[in-house]
Length: 381
Image 1 (cartoon, rainbow, N blue to C red):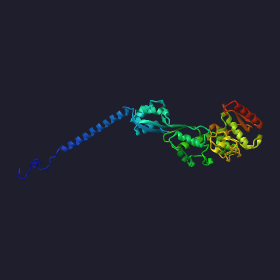
Image 2: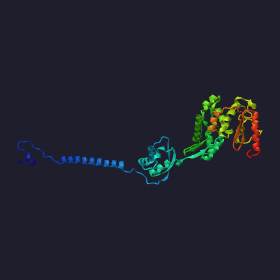
Image 3: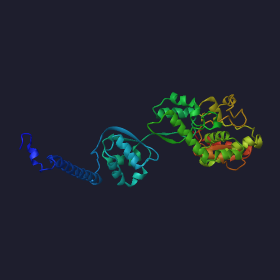
Image 4: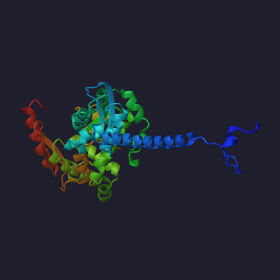
């Protein structure tokens, strides 16, 4: 070996090129990395598979209950059970949608849950939340009954007494009647169009929504009675029929008499002066409405001379509009009056409401004398 020759040169074959000695470490490392990737992928797949199986077969998250605090939740029209579950989970009432769905699936009545507002607690057991929804008694509402025959002023007073709103707040809405949805022929006057019924107002109710609900309910009654079609057939406007309905409500105390009272009103309007009449309706309640007092107040001879288009003792025909809120039966009677030739009616018994109808003035006097005899023996007069 010469002084310039290296040990590596010695390893080169004689007469051939020198070869460098290669390390085996990189190749081994690549194998190890590949093996790690395979094993890691296997572990990931197995782990996710276990989690999937667990999620499919394990019980969904649920609170033990009984919960805490208060949560108001609204079930809206068209909500599915799944949508209720999602909403309750977002509100913190139930722990998972699946727990709610499982609890609902065990209850046959879950498909008929009623719309409305319900009160829950946070972190309730899903089954307890379903139980609340299944009972309609749990719906949060203010139930207000508006009787037939009330004037707008009376209705406002009753609404204010039965809610958290003042009379002025309701009056503010009435002063802007364009928001109420009144028919055009009402000309912005709600008298007679706030329908008497029982209403369930939720916690989100406002004076506007409450009054609108009453007008909407009137519209249902008008459609059911075919108010517009009947008005055209009878030769009146729908507003005039509503006025007749209000008079029927004021005058007829018994259901079976409503159609006859309506017929008396139409006969007097259409045939003034017939059967001894003087061409006037002569209904006491219209005078009281004109004066602004209770419609059942006993009138005096002086009252009958009160100057007002609502006073049917001095003004011919119908008053300008309804004098109170008629119900379904009175509207139906105005739209479909009983056939007959009556021009008078007299309630001969105030206790039972018995009313007799007369075609002539002499017949009327007979019934009027019967009423006077009744009053002589009764303290109801």
